Every structure is written in C-alpha cells, then in structure tokens.
Image: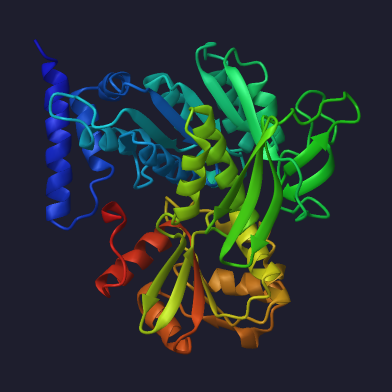
Length: 463
C-alpha cells in the first residue's frame, strides 16, 4: 500500500502551483511547498531519499544560483535527469515545491540526481532532511544582518552540521575562504577543495566590507600572500602556522575579457581543463571553478564540463542581457557589499562609460537595514565616466552614497519609483547603446515583471 499522506501532499502541491500560475499570481515556487509540508511534514525527506543518484547541496552567500545552474546543465548534458530548484527559491518551502513539481503523483522522481541550491540559514535543515552525497560551500560573506545576525552565527551552525556528516559524504569547499576551510577541517566527511592557484587580478588590501581576516585557530590576524576578492585569497597565520589547505582543483591562467566573458584553466592533479565562460568578473570565475570541480567530483567527463560551461547563459538577473526599444540592457543583481563591490570593480576595470541605474529596495528579501550601502566601495564609480541614476524605494539613499563617494552631483540622477524610473532611464540611453541596471533582489523581480509586460523577457519560472 502506498504512502497516502505523501501522495496527498504531492497532489496538493502540484494543484496549488498550477492554480497560482493560471491565475497569474506568480510562479508557484514557494507556496506549494508550504501546502505540501503542512500535509506531510516529512515530504522533503521522503522525496530526497527516492532520488537514485542522491542530492548535491550548493550553499554560499554569493554565487549559489549561478553555480547550481551551471552544474545542473553539465549533468543534463551528460544525459542525467536533474531535479533542481531552478527558480532560486531556496528555503525549505521552495525546495519542497521544486521536488513536488518534479515527481509523479506517486512520488517517483523525474530525474536521477538532485541539485539543491540552499539559503545559508536553511543549510542545516536541508542537509538533515536530504542527506546529500555532496555539499558544495562557495563562500561566507556579510549579508542581511537583520535576517541572519553576525557571520559567526552562520559559521557556527554550518560547522555543527558538517560535524554530523559521515565518511560516505563529501564536502567540496572554496579553500580561498578562511572560514570555510576552518569550519570543515574536523568533519568526518571526505573533504575536497577548489580555489585560485594563481591570479593576476589581486587587491592591495582587504576591502572595508571584507570579513574573516582572523585565524580561527588562534585568533591572530591572517596574512595574505595573494588577495583576490573580499577576504578570499591565499593566506597563512604567522602565529600558529595555519594556512590555506592544498587545492584539489586549482584555477590558473585566469583572464577577464571586459564585461563579456572570462576564462581559466582548472588544474586537477597532473591534468588541466581549459574553460571559457560567457560570464564576466572574478566572482563568476569562482562560480565556474566551483561548478566544474563539483561536476568532476561527480565523475562527469571533462569534455562535457567544458562544453556545457562554454554554452552557459547566466541565470535571470545575473548578467542577464535583454533588448528593449533598440537598446541593450544588462541586468546585474546586487544584494550585499561584497557582491556590489565586485560588480563595481568589474565595471571600473573595463573603463565603462555606458549609463548605469542602481535600484535599491529595503523589503524583507533585500534586508531592511540599508546601512550596508556605506560598506560598498562606491568610489569605484568615480573612476569611470558613466552617467549614474538611482531608483527604487531607497533611491535617495543610494544617491547620497554616490555623492559622498566623490561623484559630482551633475552625474547623479535620482529617478525614484522603479515603475516610472525604468522608462525614463531607457529613454535616456541613446539608441543602439548598452546600459546597466544593478538591482537588489526584490527590485530585480519587479524589474523583470515590468520587462515582461513590455514583452522583452519571460518570467523566471518559464526560463
């Protein structure tokens, strides 16, 4: 006899998702999970256990959506069916909704393996419920302090979770992050690492928004032999001798090609794999290296990894390119100081002169506390000649931050509410030119709704 409660929960989840979409009330990426969990509290545990190839969980403050999407595409190109919360809804309810959509009414999975992107705070519960074969940890940066508290609280909860694993499970960490290296070293699970073995694009000092410059063994300040991004780099402690772990997958020959693409060679023992990606910025090359390392750890052929990454297109809102009224818009999500800093760094390195609109909201999903704007190195924008506009709920706050970054007021145009700001901004861009829009999370969702109404993008659950 089947599991009646599970079947009822799956059916209710599927029906609620279908109803939400038919009514035009959204993508049905979260509420169906709430409904399903209410009917069967163990639904996620049960469905995850039925995936033949097990689950891969991807977590990190930045880059988890892009990394998990790259990984899913590599696996699909290898001929595997993949269960994946592709929409980016990464709390328990969103992950449950993705599973209920991608199983039959009797609970048979549509794929052989699951790729689960998870929110930082949800990681412990997701690991407990899905019992993943592989956990990929990308980074830990300061993010939305009004939601999660200090970075150390997340690190402690992750460490506790990693210490509950067993030797049959694997952790793949970005070893360039000192926190991830420290919290994973005592786990019973098998540990592998990736990072930058060499990189010509370095920072002279830790940015103001950087974290984790303290040795987690003895409390002394870390010394960086190379600093690549925020607090990511090749580090050591002069007091106790702790240093970055050896890299199982080391990226080298890193090249950035303006705002269009990047490339790297990933060293795997005595072998090497060259990867070209249509993604700009060092932060995206970390995502590429992490996804490739994960796929290779899972046994995917190197030529498949190479081909899938070469053809990958960014997830919605993450370096998403759209055409509107004979203009080219590039949408680049910003959600915390580190991510914002790296976008600005990429723009500055390219000596960009195209118009930029920064859209700042302070809704729950963005974080209510916008003091983080003062941790952003907005001074990068003083190095380029691009016209700057601000929009969103906190348009005025962003304009003030730009002013205090030393940018002349003549270059700053506060546009206010996004609904009217979008048309004004597009009209200000000469035909045939490219412009950049940098929105926070809810601003990005609203922006894509407005672009969808204008017929230039599909909604994220349709892509």
